[in-house]
Structures are given as C-alpha cells and as structure tokens.
Image (cartoon, rainbow, N blue to C red; front, side):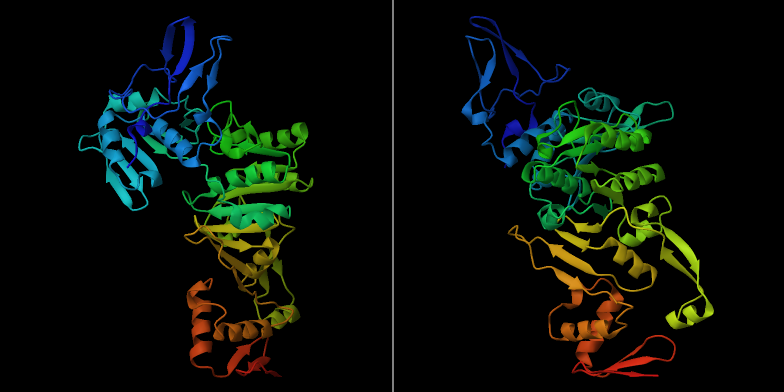
Length: 470
C-alpha cells in the first residue's frame, strides 16, 4: 500500500569532496541504517551545483509536493525509531495513515494504536536495547519527559523508574492538517478570542496550529505561538511549516509558561497569541492580563464541556470566575431559587468557546459569558453544532436557543414548536432532557404547561398562542 521509502530515514545529504567524489551523511547522530535503505528509494534527487559547491534541489522537490507525501516522510522518521521487524509489521496495517501512537514498555509487547483499536507489533517483549535505540534518535528529554524529532510534529514521551532510567516510551504521531480550522473561520476572522476545550487526543493542538497558520498567512496578522512542549511548532530551532508565517516562543520549563506569555507581549508586539494547554492558575491569570491589553487569544484547555471549566478552581478565571451570592427573600421567591446562588464574577477572558466533540464535529458557544450565565442558572445555553461531512464540506449549523429570563419561557415553547415542524432532529439536542422534551411535544401535540416563577404559569397551545395565569 505504501512504498518502502516511507519507513526509512530521509534522503542523505550530499557533500562534494572532490570533482568526482561524493560522501553520504545520514541525518541522525547514530549510524544505524535499515538493511533495505537503498532499495526502491522514491525520494526526489538532490543535485550538486559543481560551480558553487552548494547543493540545489530538483524541481521534483519543489513546493508542488502534496501534503500526503510530506506526511509520509515525517511518519517514516517516526517509524525509524522501531526495530525493522516492527516496521514491517506495522506497514501491513490498513490504517497506517491514521496511526495515533506507538507504545513501547519494557518487558511488554509493543502496541500501535489506531482508531479501530490496539495492534500488536511483535510477539516478543520490548528490551532495553529497543528503548536505547529509539531514544538515541530523538532530541533531549526536557523536564516534562517529552522529546521530539527535529522538523516534525511527533512527540516522544518517556516513562522513568525511580532511578531516572527510561523504561517506556509513547511515540505520538503529530499531523499538520490544513483546513482543520475551517469550521471556525468566521470566528477567527472576526477577531474573537477562542478557548478550545476537549479531552486528550481529540485534536485541539491540530486545530489551533491551523488557526495560527490561517491568521498569519490568510489575514496577515502578527501571530506569536507560546509553545509549551513544542507540539504546535515541532521540535528543533526551526519551526514546522504547518504554522505558516507565525512565530514561535519556546518554553524552557512548563512552570515558566506564564512568564513567557508576558514576555511575548512586552517584547514582540503580537496581534494574536496562541497558547497550548492552559493548565495552572498562573497561566490563566497571565492570559487574563493579556486579554485586557486588546490582544486576540487562541488557547486550549483540557475538559469535555464548559461545565468542567466552571468546576475547575484553577481555570474558572478564564470564564470570568465564579462567586456565591446571597439573595434577599423577595428576589429568591421571584426567581424560584434558593437564597444562595452562583453567579459569574466578572467578564470572561475569551469571547467564544468551542467544545471539540470529534475531529469533524464542534459545539460552538458564540457568547461564552451567556453560556456561563445560563449554566449557573440551570438553563440551556445557546449552542451551534458544526460538522464536516465526508466530502469535506461544512454542514448546516444547528442552533439551540437558550432559555432567556427576560422573555421567560415563551422562547422555549416557540422553539419546541419549530422542532415539531422538523427544523431540528431528535439526536441533535444538547442533553437527554431536551430530547425528551422534543419527543413529548411532537408526539402528544397537547397543551404545554410551563411553571415560571412562584404560582405564575404559561400555557401554550399547539398553534403557538400563549396565556399567562396566576
């Protein structure tokens, strides 16, 4: 399915020694080569300019090369960390291009993880020599036990024993997917500060990398990336081409990320700052400070929904902070709630929020402050479902209307009538509760009675007429 050149090192550099003598130099510091390194090589030729002594590239190696070919080369550099038998085994897998990561633990069988499940690469357990061979071909491991391969987006994470010896590796495949942020182009173009939320492995870094490229190349903005572990711009001093014209600030220690954020603003005059993995209170406070200076922010945080941020004491400042408020008896009776409630403390650091459901589906909160207010008051927020179909085209967004306290529950009833007319499907509701409400409204078509505050009721018939009673 793939050529054998996919599983080998990049083409060797050619340096002129004499008029008819050439020396081959491998890219890596080790002298290990696969046995069939020179067989069926499909890499474009690199010609030597005899007049200047500098090598020049043939037209086949020009910018017309497809993204698939570039990914094949980068994937081959990652698979070169594996012994030959494992590379041969993984090459037979039909989902090779969808490889997620390779796990190598001392004394256990190596695993390759694909969307369909785990795949054993060998019947023999991993040895110390296998671990040493892999670690000798990557960069130095930082304090966070992460390393990379120069000019690629792959991430190599180490597991150490109590003595500091590496006994396990997680080789994560990094991809620069152009167009992965097209579903958010309108928000990016409007200058909105975006907070992307999702569990590990769902594609947060891939999306913000494409957003950085989009802002720098398409909209000609000064974009600075604060790259905590070199996942956005890749390992090495020269950033990966996937970030376009955006610049990158490397973080020597994850504990210093908040200082690098402030340094970026003070020294480099950015219009946009891209941050990966805001995880501490200091980083959240630094992001809040930057937002107050009028700089567009694009950042990610671990979580599944906005509610996870609300319940996270370290990151709640990103959505304005949460405070407990005690209401008077009259106000508590008017709202129909307890005297002590939770409310948003101040303005949100980010104007919009995005929950990443999968690589092709996003849940967009255009107004993050309205979403937080709705969640704290027990109401459904306004959500847009954006999907990318199999043809790569954006599907029509579905909008769920929030329950507005200003218009009471009349808005909700009208929305349910629209649902009955087929404008929104059953399975597209944000929760099981709202799905049940839609089924009741469509099947029974009876009077819908909603209790508002105190003894006040709103009765709406199927025609949309409403009547208020006390």
